[in-house]
Amino acid sequence: MARIKANGIEIEYEETGSPNDPLMLLVSGFSGQLTRWPDALKRGLADAGRRVVCFDNRDIGLSTEFSGAVPPAPRDIVQAISGGTPPEMAVPYLLNDMADDAAALVTALGADKADVLGVSMGGMIVQLMALNHPERVRTLIPVMTTSSAPDLPRSTPEAQAALTAVPETRRAEAVADLAVKSRRVIGSHDEIRATDEAIRDQTIADFNRSDRPMGVARQYAAIVAQPSWHERLGTITQPTLVLHGAMDPLIRPEAGRDIASRIPGAELEVFEKWGHDLPDRIVPTLLNRIVPFLGRHLPDAARADIA
Image: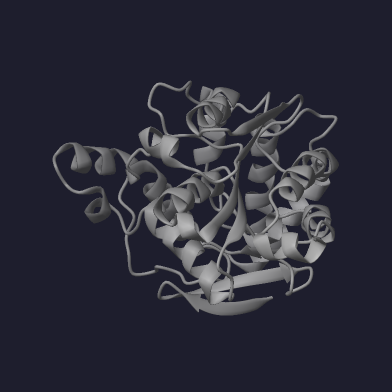
């Protein structure tokens, strides 16, 4: 792993593949560290000819922590914005700022553009990258995420409770136990979902690497306060592939369909038995859809090399 400065913060990142290949950026979801990306996914994308970079979003993992900023409660955020407070003044930062981070990271890594894939909150961030920094995005792959349209179906009550649950104590074992319970609610079908043991081991390893509960709260505040962007999606011109799970209870598949309907020419794939997680057993299925998509949208330099 390495660290680089971008958009005024320090970003911890990891590379897979050749540094001479076109850049592909993987943007993590809410509270997710870069360690959550399956090795098989990174290697599969690298084998397809991409320089694959995943990173810790601000406030999570080993990237810059905004420790001096107190995250307001979600209800207070909504009341403040309803009362006329500008969203950017109501919270420490917005998803717009996180999109700025990712776009600046592309430049800091020496690339002009990147194929960008984001999951969940990361899928929101990559949409905002394409809208706010279109010159940095070659192709767009929003995964298990939303367009922010207010009339979309809400999470199931059980899934929302799983997202916002807190462990009984701030110990690795308690955090891991909660992760196992949450994944049973929001995760994939039993045939696909990771085992409880694997989930527990991953969670403990992540906890030992970095534990930032206030960073998690600040990221949640950024989601709550972010102005909606769904009405802008029609301006996106980058080739887009939207991926979603048919049994996702947290961000319902209707949200993925809505993104695809709003972006001109967007492709959509909804996979059966897939929930709101990224288990190893879904990786081959995802690669079988992503790799051909990337192959149809090679960078100009790569096309010249092939010719």
